Image (tube, rainbow, N blue to C red; front, side, top):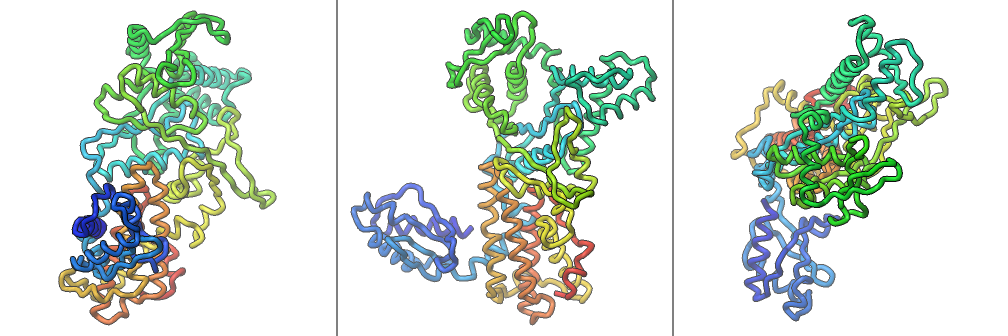
Length: 562
C-alpha cells in the first residue's frame, strides 16, 4: 500500500538526514486536495529533540526524499511552520486499481484480529412481544459490528440473550391468562393486540385446558418465533439463542454467589426497599460508585446483576477471548457494576466491553391530516410499532442502511415517509443506484460485444480525469475506513464512505462516457468501474445491505446509455 511505502521512505529520509528517531510517524489525508495526497507533521515532532527549527528539519527531510526517488512521488511541499505535503503522480492510484482487482471480495480486509474469538451479544429483546421498530437499530448495528470485526480476522459469535425469567415473564403470564380466560387484564399487564392474538390461537389449538404455566411457555415460544422471523427478514442470523432460565436450572447463579462468598466479596446488610437482609457485592472495592445488590435473603430472588454475572462467566467458560454487549443508553449506570463483578469473578479487567446506543424516534404521515407525527412506542401499553410493521413497508436493505447512517451513540429519527420514497433523495436508494448503474454499464458492454482486455495489457495511464482519480482515491482510503470502523465499533463510518463513494460515482457517471470512449480509454474505464463495483459491493456487504445488479427505475432515472 502507498501509505506503508511512504512511511518507510519518510523514516529512511529522517535517518539519512541525521535526525533522531521520531517514534510514531503518521500520514494524514489533507482536507483540501491542493495540499497534496498525504501530509506529515514529523518535522514539528522532531524540533525539540533535534534542537532545530521545524522548517529546517522539513527541508532536510524533503531533500532526502527527492534524492531517494521515491516511487510515485512527484514533489514534496513544505507548508506553514514545517508540514510536509506529499503530491503523488496518478500512477499510485493505478496501483490501487490493481490491488482492488487482485484482492476482489477480500479488498480492505486485514488480519489484526486473527486468533480472537469474540462473543457479540445484541438485540436481546425480552420475549414478551415482537421487536419494536426502534429495536431495528440494535439489529442493524450489532450485525454490522460483527461483520467489521470479522473483516479484521476475528471469529465472531452472534448471541441473543433471552430474558425468559423474572418479573416481565410473570406479567406476560398474567396477561395471557386474562385474555385466554376472558378475565380483566391486570393493571400493569401487556395490552397489545398480539397478546389477544396468541391467547385466541392457543385456545383454538388446545381448548380451555391449558394451565397458566403452559400458556406462558407456548406464548413465549410463539413470540420467539416472531422475533426470529423478523430477524430473518432483515438478514440477521444468531449463532446462539441463550436462555436466562438455563442459568437458574443449571445452578450457575448459585455457583456465582458461592464463588463470591468464598472470596469474601459479599456483605449481608439490611435493604430498606426490600425490607430484608440483602447480599451485596462489594463493587466499590473495584472502582464502582457503590456496592450492588445480588440476592434477597428472605425470598431468594436474585438481581439482574447476579444473573448477568452468571451469564458472562458462562460466555468466558465457552472459550471466548473477548465479550461485547450492545445496550441501550438507559443502562449506562450498570456498566461499571457488571465489569466490576466480572473482574471479581475472573480477574479480567474491562470485560465485557459495552457499546451504548441511543434510542430511535419514529415518524410517519398522519393519514387523516397529512401532517408528520411521532409514533409513540410502549410494549406494555400496546401502542408500539413493531419491526415487522416497518418491514411490511420498507425492505430490509433500506431499514438496515437507514439505521446505520448515524452513530449509535446519537439519538436517531427514522422517518417512514423518507425511507419509503423511491427517489435519489432516499440515501439508501441513492447508494444502491450507484451499484446498479455499474452493473448496467457492464451488461451494455456485453450486449455490444465489448470485452475487457487483460488488465496487464491495459494502459491505466489514460485515467487522468479528476472524477476517475477521485474514485480511486476513495478506494485507496477504504481499508483504513474499515479498520477504523472496526476498532471504534462504528459502522456508520462505513455507511458514510458508501454514501460518499456513491456520490463520487454518480458524478463520474454524469461526466465521463465509458462505452463511447476511444478503445484505450474504454478499456481503462471498464477496469475502473469493475474496481468500483468490487469496492462498493464489499462495503455494502459489511453493512449487510444487498448490492443490486438492477433497479426497477434505473432506465427511467438515467434515460441514457453509458
